[in-house]
Structure formats: C-alpha cells, structure tokens
Length: 378
Ligand code: COS
Image 1 (cartoon, protein in one colour):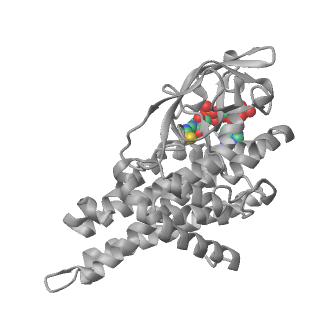
Image 2 (image 1 turned 90 degrees about the horizontal axis):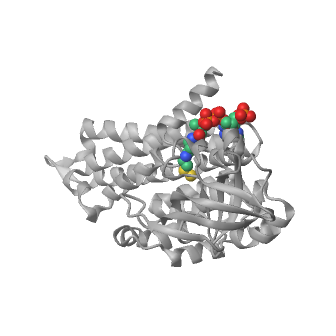
C-alpha cells in the first residue's frame, strides 16, 4: 500500500525516535521488568501518547492510520513500550474522548491526551475474561456517588496510570444492559492497586490489579448513561484491537528483518544459510504474512476514520496480525538456531512478546467468534 507523504513522515519520525531512544532499553526493561518512565517522558514531548487526538487537548492530530504506524514502529523495537502506548491511547483515553460529556472532557483530556498522566481501562476480572459481560464488580448508587466494590485484574498501566475507565454492574438483573462505565482516579478513597504481575513477555510494561473497596465514585464520573457501559467497552475494544494488530505487526516486522539479516550473514556448509531453500521458504512466507497483516491493519484503520462499521474487520486484523506475529517469531528463532534461543540475540524476546497479542483484547478464539457471528448473523 502506497502511503501518503504525511504517513511516510510519521513513520520516519517515529522510527528515528524508536531506534535512538526506545531500542537501547528494550532488552534491559525486559530483564528488569522496570517501567520505562524516561522513554514515556520523551514520548510525551513528541506527542506520541495522544497521536490520534485533537491538538486542542494536546494530542498529535493524526488520523488512526498515523497512530497505527506509530504503534507499529515503537513495537518493532520494543513491544512493551508499544503496548503501554496502545493501552493508554486506545483503551484509556479513547472512551473519555468519544463518550465523555464536555465537563468530563475538560477535566480529564488535557492531562491524559498530552500524556502528563497515563490512563488505563478496567474491564477484565478474575471471573470475567472472554465473557466480558460477566462483570462482578458492583456500583451501588448512594446520593451523588456510586459505591464501587470489586477487583479488576491484568490491567495494563494498572500501577502507573492515574485515570481509568472501569465497568461495574449497576443492575444485575439486566445482565450486560446493567453494566455502567465509570471514570476513576488514583487517590479516590477505597481505590488501591493490588498485585503487580510478573509476566512471560512485554515485561517492561506494567500490569496490575485494581481493587475497589467501598470506593466512592461521584455520579458525575459516569460515562454515558447507566447500562451503556458494555457497549462503550465493546466499541472501545474494536479500536484497541486495531492497536494490538499494529503491535503484532511491529513484532513480526522485527522478526522478519532480523531473519533476513541473519540468513545473509550466517554461513554453514560454506555458504550463507539464505541460499538454502528451507530458509528461503520461511523468509518468503514470513514476508508475505507481514505484508498481508499490514494491509488488514491499515485498511481497518482507514475504515475507522470513515466512520464505517469495523467490528468484523478489527477482529480480522487483530486475529491475523497476532497469529502472523506468532508464526514469524517462531520461525525467526528457527532460522537463528541455537543463537535464537539465547537471550543475547533478542529474538527469543520477540517470541515471548508476541504471545500476548493472541490473548489480550480478546483471544484469537473470541476474534473468530466475533467474525463468525457477524458473517452468519446468528
Ligand atoms: N460495539 C458496540 N456494541 C456491540 C459490539 C461492539 N463491538 N459487539 C456487540 N455489541 C452489542 C450487541 O449488539 C448487543 O446489543 P443488544 O443487546 O442491544 O442487541 C450487546 O452489545 C451485547 O452483545 P452480545 O450479546 O454479543 O454479548 P456477549 O456477552 O454474547 O459477547 C463478546 C460479546 C464475546 C463479543 C464480548 O464479550 C467480547 O468481546 N469478549 C472478549 C472481551 C475481551 O476482549 N477481553 C479482553 C479485554 S483486554 S482490555
């Protein structure tokens, strides 16, 4: 796909930044699982934490495709930083940007769109993963407040973000139509951060529990009406799935580039291993996969800005790109042989980082369910 001059510039700018500032830390934050605050500060200065939002709120003013390219480029060098950016932007900021009233936008957007404060999204619970409607967190109205009780788990940016949008049940009988979205802030009485997770991959990103114990959330922090929370969240996840597709694409691109470089340099049986058909086939398939994933992810990014229905296409792009990332990183290790298995070569990190993309923001099984339901209309 031929990109416009503006999109090419975005790629160039983000790639230069990623190579210079993000890549040198990728291995270290993977090893130490330390959140890359210094990188986040630099991303804030470049408006990389609010790329698709209006400049009046401190955003980058790009379209969704520009943002997709941004997440792809950051993830190409460090998926942990990529997911931090994607979760903040697509899951943390977007619901307030799209569904907030004027007062909520004025109160929250300047800080989170500019990235002065990080944002997160609290949907998943110990007993509500794929079944996102199974939310057990409750919000009981008491005067001008909701009293919130429950636990959210596996929340990206959980311990580093200051503003979250969460789901809570306000009417259990109404099932998914009884779920309400609330904006919560760190520091609200009764809201605390629980366990910080020790993960297989994307280790430099932050994942933590959010715990609510009789937390008082002002009614004015309700996003939309009571009962609209489930649809707000599913809509938000459609956009989030594009960003996970972009992250997977960046990881797959990195695996492809490393494999090409290694296949040209590594000599066995007196010649570069890239001369052997078995290696050529893996590289050819990897490149074809990456190209196809890119087309799907870019196409749905453009469709989103046109206001088209993207539910199926976002699921397809995320499903395909994440499975491409799995295949590409697996074969990149195979091409690198023993060296690929060693931490020094940084290929095994790509493999570990790729795995979350077939799980987070809806497993591959859920994406197939969303696609099939849409096609079959059942
Ligand atoms: N955007 C807006 N509304 C949507 C929607 C979407 N993408 N998808 C469905 N809806 C609506 C439906 O139209 C339905 O509305 P009505 O009741 O008015 O008809 C309502 O939401 C409920 O939908 P549905 O009955 O399909 O809900 P289910 O509980 O059966 O399941 C799935 C929905 C499985 C698709 C949903 O739970 C899901 O996406 N699960 C995965 C969650 C996930 O990704 N978790 C990871 C979070 S990581 S941040």
